Length: 257
Ligand SMILES: NC(=O)C1=CN([C@@H]2O[C@H](COP(=O)(O)OP(=O)(O)OC[C@H]3O[C@@H](n4cnc5c(N)ncnc54)[C@H](O)[C@@H]3O)[C@@H](O)[C@H]2O)C=CC1
Ligand SMILES: O=C1O[C@H](COP(=O)(O)O)[C@@H](O)[C@H](O)[C@H]1O
Image (cartoon, helix red, strand yellow):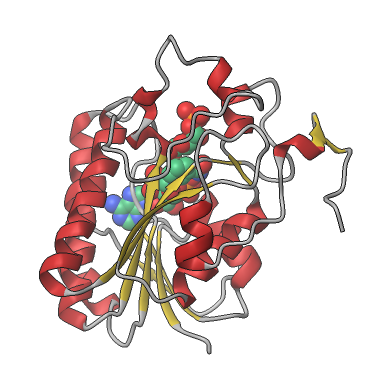
């Protein structure tokens, strides 16, 4: 059944991937501080997520929130991640609870756990033969202040689930790249998330029943060091793409039938 979904950060790249795959599948209310540059499904609210009144108004009648808005730069300074990523995310969770929203899907990041990639483990970690896997049960080890803000968002989600019974899925997104995996970048190939797998994963987050989950948002890459088993089990995620099927920009192999 189509759900009424509020998508924050809708004008960005992850929003583009989600709407590219799911525009007709749900009833959308889109929110971003930047207005849309082209036609979008549903209504578009131009607002900042730190504007409590505007966020509360945008929650009216919403079943599910996909919360993408924030500063996505790994090098983002503290004042920006504190305002946009931590304070903004708290505003979204609080308004969601007060509006009776069923679930919030939070765009977390690989950078919440980036410091598991120690000098001793890399670059072997990024290669197919290496069997080291993070599975979402490990503690955060952020690689920058942006990663700290994402770990804080996950913890806010834990609080709003435990204290207010909100369903929360935190997706530690890898490297979303359109069309093909990153080129000459082993880490990016290991954590590649294709546009169609991104749309499918967030669709599963909209439709599935869960309590509190932390999952990795990557395609089914042979090189992976993030397990996607929890996303499969808890959400029914069934990715189609794999960076190993590509040679540069060219798709050179097809999955087994
Ligand atoms: N693109 C990727 O590979 C990854 C993205 N993420 C996360 O996914 C989310 C979306 O990332 P992208 O689409 O790549 O970034 P983006 O920069 O393309 O999109 C972010 C959108 O959020 C909006 N925004 C930022 N601060 C806002 C605020 N205070 N109020 C309202 N709108 C605001 C921006 O205007 C922009 O349209 C971010 O939270 C990012 O940290 C996490 C891991 C990987
Ligand atoms: O969280 C994010 O991660 C991706 C991938 O990280 P990178 O350090 O390999 O580039 C990044 O591209 C994106 O901007 C960021 O929001």
